[in-house]
Length: 232
Image 1 (cartoon, rainbow, N blue to C red):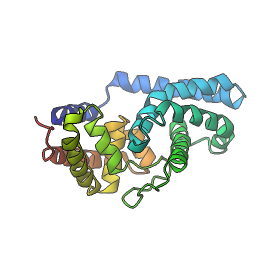
Image 2 (image 1 turned 120 degrees about the vertical axis):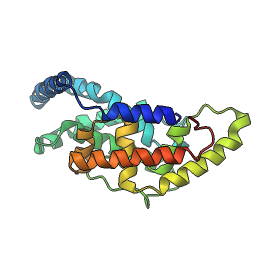
Image 3 (image 1 turned 90 degrees about the vertical axis):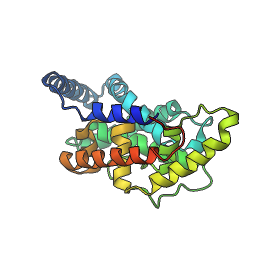
């Protein structure tokens, strides 16, 4: 993903919602509320339907935050399958606080499963020194995960050395970012969540989340200008 792609996505994400988009969001919320009512009544297929509605967003979350060292050993589908089982077992916990956004609760379940996967498969603990604490979220997006996502996995062996150097430089630059700015960038830019969803997950006002996203996106573009291969 080069700078033009970053800029294009940034512009797209900053466009205000249209009236039609707001109407669709309201209809979606009503649909989710109806499904939750069925789940509360013991309708297990309704939970499967709810999970399916959020699957794409949850998959992007896992793809971004799954440690690169687990590539080939654990897939996002594996994590989501186990997380769905967790949700089945713990759905009563959600109804103890029914005012919380269901997506936020479901994301927390997936995040906890992802943390369990990391503990199970990685003998060496993840470096949490530069990670931001997210009360409602998941494993915070660290600089290594973001760097791996930006560089991708398509380099040929002949470019392996150059890619390793670029990865190290990119990871170092991302690690120097404010942790909360890096997390906003992960949520808005990579997971493609709305500003409202991002603000809710981080426990900040939408205006603050939007301001941080603009700042983080500008910083990301500055970083990519220093990395070989990200040319305009």
